[in-house]
Image 1 (cartoon, rainbow, N blue to C red):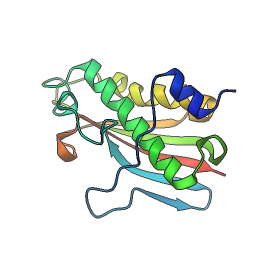
Image 2 (image 1 turned 90 degrees about the vertical axis):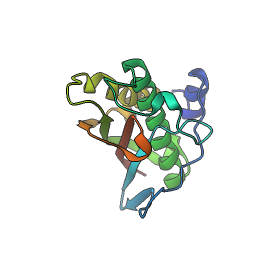
Image 3 (image 1 turned 135 degrees about the vertical axis):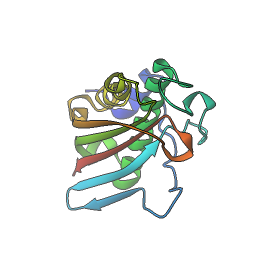
Image 4 (image 1 turned 30 degrees about the vertical axis):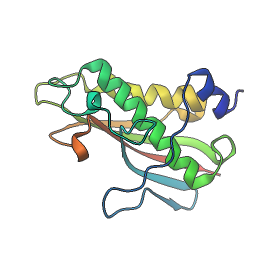
Length: 157
């Protein structure tokens, strides 16, 4: 099995620095063998929100941009997990759950494929340990007008 670092490199990706909270919450909580990750929006590698990932799916944001935004959310989730456990290869037992929030116009019916961006990346990076239960919800607004936000829960060693 390849390491997480090797899988990231093969995909041309690097984990960003774990983002600091933008309000009154903590980025993660570790309790027993679980780590719960607060919702992560689609900050890019430079820590900013790309204009292509701002706005609503079905209006300003295309499906392709939404999938890319969901992938960024997943990378930010993994950065928080790494901050919590130190080593994704030995610290993560299983991604238990992802919860996705898609900033969308009321008539947008393609929520699941957008969230697949995050789900697929989790499996690409963690392999079978990345398979998870999931919820996906369309919402009227997200912080900083982000297109996508993803929260998570992991079983850890």
